[in-house]
Length: 95
Length: 494
Image (tube, rainbow over all chains, first blue to last red; front, side):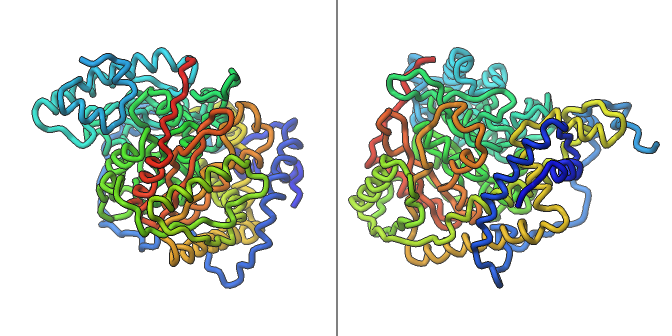
């Protein structure tokens, strides 16, 4: 599977991660090399094999649907790049 | 009061005895390490944040508790904390620029357990960015330098990764022991590269709450320590059920240290054929054979076993881990915490913040993850990898029908030079060839220093156990440690 610069551009867009134009080709080569090495998985017969999503066999626990924490706006906002009062300040979303 | 040089070389076990006998105080112990760190860190770069004031304050409080007869199991023990653990009021970066000056408003469960038991924090330890790397070279703070050097050489070597700061700090006596995490080998490979002991427990033993997430189905915390017994003491405190982590196991935490020194007579130990790689350095093959002989002499029954899907573990990992990472790291968007860059619109702010904040290897893995999860590729890559993961876990299940534990090398080489493998990602990934299988299957694995190579660098052997059977591998690791008689220490040059 060969990954070209256009694919890197598309995936980078999906990941919201800017990759400079000048880096697209070399990144495509690196990812192609990695994916080529990964291709060996196709040698494994996985017919009828149940995919493994977790090593924990137990059923995930349920808890009461109640508020257990909260009321700490200063802690929540302590690391905000920008804040105003008890709000995060973010770039304009609606044009 | 004992001379500070004596205090520096202590094990946790010996320090607890000395503290109990009032030969020295927790404050004296902390001060010893604070001074050692101040002198060594400019050369080794093991700590990314030193917290001497906090350490002294915690140590004094510990001395007060001990005086009041309220000593916990780790009372007064000075530890280094990998910078992947959130520590309330103390900066946590995951060695990434994107977290910037993030100061967690909460404490990870693992570190909370340590403070509950009386431990003292010396500072935060360097690591590969978001724990993605095997040489510590992806850290935004620069690489850690291994305290060990090849005989007759001044070349700077990697301490391994991602827990390179933890391993180097323990090896250079810059703490009594350290916390670490392991997603594909990040505790065990650095332990092997630095002559220290590291255990990745069963998935679910240690809570992941407050540990910066990399690949959630694989991440697991564990200790790096100077001896098998110290690792057992520390792991007991780190472990335990936590309702804040839905994958945390609600099971009893045994007294792991009680297994160290227990007879291993009659235990069946498997030696997997598939771990004998073509091109493996002869010294490592020889050390492995030697390990077999040591365990035989201790009364173990050795059996050849087969884990046929071993070679597919790393490629499966390099789909699963980046896929989970690309999802986990989506939270770094520059809005609520961390770095925020400028941009003409919201999308550009996201894209630029992430481009500025993430390093090369993290970027590569996010892109691989986004690619394998993107429409049309999910089945071919992600689903396929999860099926292969099941095959690998089934291999272990079959082997554990016949044996109680497995013995393998920890890493395919000794520590290599910084800069040696940065340009070839796949060559770097191969560091984890012997360790990554246990992450995929969720099993415990421990690395024990077992010998030196021709250049005088430490080499490790790994023991793998059944899920939740850390006890057996602690016993076997203790037997190996005793037989190997490894007393190696890096000669201080720093």
